[in-house]
Structure formats: structure tokens, C-alpha cells
Image (cartoon, rainbow over all chains, first blue to last red; front, side, top):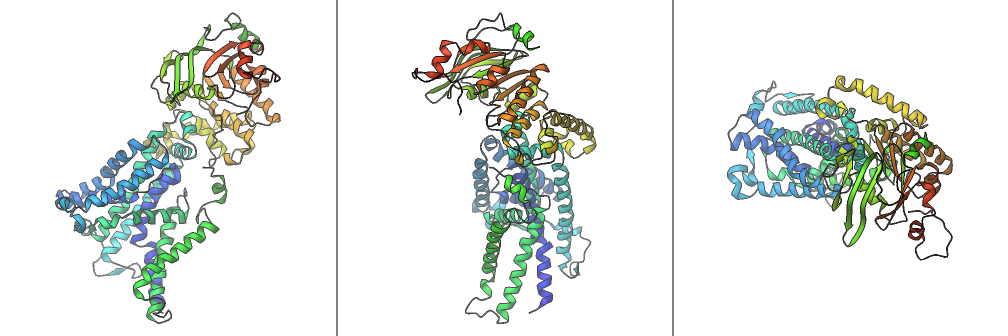
Length: 330
Length: 283
């Protein structure tokens, strides 16, 4: 067994690209669900908004990279939140859940339709829209950085990702300790109580939906930049649920919850992946039990077992508090 | 003080829909039906400013529905209501609170996973820090926050909840939640307080203190309208009683006149003439 490879792989999982994308998406979900009580089962569509906002602006419309950034992080998510929120936020929470999950599937299916090839690149997606981003990189393309974990371009994405993550976490922290954040928590606890005290619950929920969507879009855009491609299959419903897993693992309604959860999720996925792979290769696990091609599936089974144990032993997540969990009377 | 205020109502005719000398709330021809069931059908009602008015009636009389209509948590099919001369038609519920009419709920809505003090702070209206653009600039709202907190602490003191300040509201007892909800409503600095069954689920020891608090609201110049089943409370603190049955207002008058009113007795007892007169009930 190659211990160095195991360590390196696990470290890449713990704070590499996937961790950043999903931590951002999970922070958005935390804004929606953890603080406001909104059930968003379509975070993937906000991530897609970020990815396609940038890539369509640059590739399809030939606009400037920076305009693409604004479209992807601000304009597209805001429009999406309005489309999904206006009809549903006056209703019970379940309606938003239905609309979000439907929207995310609709977007993916529409984006991959061949008739839109000229706009979205259909199932091949759009590529090579982030050259301006990599031109700004201070790192050498061929070199390895950060204890040799990341090569040049990857390092640039990861570094920008860490900075953005730090900014977003600080923003959310500052917002949630303000009176504004207090209203969101009140709406989560009881919307009618908030309304009886003069709070425009509908508008606060809309703001939370928009903001959480924008964080998701940021994650989705970084992912598109990291791979230099936005493709419909990058935004399947699994993506939404990975973000949910990260949030629940780490602890709902905790500032650090989604970040820690994403790190654990991808740390464990990478660790089990490399360990299983090496065990199969070195014959510790005989081929009659499993072979190299099954590693990918088996590690998700392990994550599943981990989640079930967590739900039984520590339902509040790693950072959550039992007292709060016990008070949840919904 | 009580006698002064109720003497204002001495000249008011004791009949449904009677006009009051200084009404803060006026309701005309309000009707609300759910499918074929007419839950509320009130021709006219005026609520006198500065007194405690009780709204009573047997189960299913439409009291809570009427309450929801008055606070715009529900909209009537037809009819109009005005609060301080202002038409409430089409105004969202949260704006009604900002106009000075605040309500509590039959099933207490304490915000469980928020501390008692945060519950209180939430009640303050027109908070600068509640706008997202200002939320990120603490210096714009820090001073107001301190004022709000000071006011909240004062009220917690008055309602004897100071020792629970930092506890989650979900850990309070049922009676304490009622107290918290009332205190929180006062953070709005209302002119009119609407209490939906303030005594439901409160133990006798706390009842007296709640009664005193409700009287305290009147002494501070607020108007109180409450729905209640507890006839002791109605007799003890209300200046005026409005009786509803089957969605209509069937009687009005000072508490002493109500128990002997034939329409009220009929409404409560219906065809069961043989059973003892007991106006208490529970929902």
C-alpha cells in the first residue's frame, strides 16, 4: 500500500476542487433550509445558472469574461429565484421543493436538447470559456504546488476557490448575526409569528432564495471554470443531493457546517477510493469479491452506511447541537 | 381607572352592533365562508378604544376566523373593516402589525430554536438592520439594537422572564410561552392588542399574573380584544363582552349583563335545557 498516495488523495478530497464547489452549494442550501426553512431540492439548477451564465456569455454571445461573471453569479440566479419563488413562496414549503426539483431537471433536459446546440452546445456543452481566468494565474502550468498536491492551473482554481469560500462564509456569518438574519430564523421557526410581528415574510424568503442561489451559482461557475466546460450532465439531481449530504453531515444552520460537511464528504470519498483501489490491486481484496471497476460504487455504499450511522448516532450533524435538534417541533 | 373607562360604555345600547363613542376598530358586513359553510357573517361591530373587550362564544362560533379576518391573516369574501379610520382591505398582515394592531395565537407561536431575548428583539418594528443592505454594516444598526435590547429586557423583567433570557424559547413551559408571546407582541409598541385565547393551557398560578398583565395593557392606554373560553377571566377583566354564535354576533354588553342574556344562554346550551348553566368550554 502506498501511504503517500493515500494521504495525497485524501488531502485533495478534503480541500480540493470538489470540496470547494460543494461547500459553496451547501452554504447556499444552508441559507435556504438551515436559516430560512426553504426546501430547495434543485440547487443543481442554480449551479447550472452560474456555469451556463458564464459559458454562454463568453462562447455563445461572445461577451467579455467579466460580463459573463456578473451574468452567472448575479443575473441568472436572480431571475431563477424570481421564477421559482414568485409563485411558490406564498404557499407551504413543499411547493418550492416541487418547483425547484422540476426546474433543475427541466433546465438540464432543455440544455441538452439538440435543437439548442447553437446556444448551449447540447449534450457536449460549452468549452474553453475560462481562458481569461487562467491567463491571470500566477502559477506555472507545469509546476506542482501546495505540497505537490495541485498542478499550476488547478492550484489557481483552488486558491481562488478558498478565497471565495472564506468571503462567502464571512458574509453569511455577518448576515446571520444581524437583525436581518434574526428575521430569517424567525420565519424558519414560524412564518405566521414573524408576520404577526410586522415582518414581510414573503420578501425575506425571496431574499434568502436569491442569496442562497447565488452562492450555489458561484460553486457551479467555479466547477465550470475548473473543468473549462459546462455540460448538462454536470448538473444532474445527484449534484443537489451531494450538497444536501454535505450540509446534513456538517450540521444544519451552523456557519461551518456546510464547509466541514463538504470536506468530510469528499475526504471520505477520496480516502475510500484510493484505499479500496490499492487493496484490490495488491490482492488484499480478491477479485472474486470486487474488482477495480466497482470501487466507485462501493465507496458510495460506504458513504451511505456512514450517513445512516450518523442519522442514528448524531442526527444533528458534526457541528450541530442536540438541544436545538430536540426543540425542532415541526 | 376601570370604572372611568367602563362608564364611557354605560350609555352604549346593549345590543349587537351598537355604536361606540370612540371606536378604534369598525367592522361592517364581514362575511367569510368555507365552501358551503358560512363561518363568519357579522353585520356590524365597533370596538371601543382603550378598554378590554372580550369575544366569547361556543365552540365553532367563528371567533378565531373572525379574529383572523380582523388582523388580515385571512380575507373576507365581502365587507369592510377599518382600524383607526384606515381601511384594512388589501393590506398584508405584516403591515397591519406596523399600523399598531398586533395579535397572538391560540396555539402559542414561540420561536423554539431562538433564545428568549432574540424572540423579544424580533418584535421591534422598523429595524434598520432588517434590510439586507444595512445588515452587513453593523454600525448602522448597533445603536438601535442596543435600544431594542434595553426595551426587551425591561419587558422581560415585567413579565418575570429575565432568568430565561438566554434560554431557547422551546424550553419554556406552556404558561411562560404565553407570557413571552404577549411580551413579544408589546415590542411592536401596538395601540391595539389582539389575544387569541390567552388563558388556554395556562396553570392557575400563572393565570392571575397573566390577568394582571392584560389589565396592565389597558392601564397603559392600549386597546385589548381577546377571545376566551375562561368565563372567570371574562368576568374579571373585560369592560365589554361581545358574544358570537354560528358566525353572527348575538349579544353585546358589559360582562354582568351577558350571563343573563337569553340569546347567550340559548346559544351555549342549545336544546340541552336540562343541563346546568356552565359557560366554560374548551376547544
